[in-house]
Image (cartoon, rainbow, N blue to C red; front, side, top):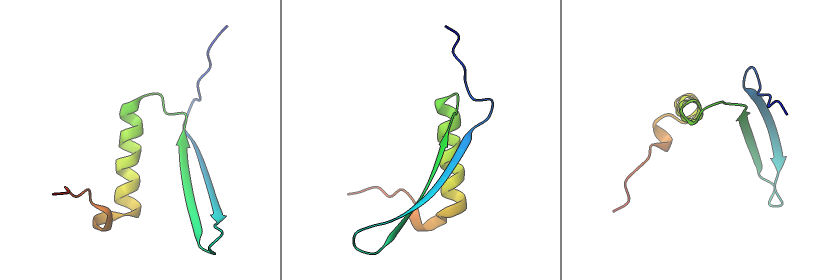
Length: 60
C-alpha cells in the first residue's frame, strides 16, 4: 500500500452557533507534514489574529 500525503495544506473554515446564542469561528489547517510546520502555522495565526491580546503569560 502506498501512503499519500497532501501536496499542500488544506484550510477549513467554519462558524457555529452555541446554545447560548454566541458564535464560534474555527480555522483548521491540516495536511502539514511536520510538527515544525504545525508550530509555525500556530505562531503565524497568533500574530495575525491575536497579537498582544493573547500573549502566553506565566501563572504565578
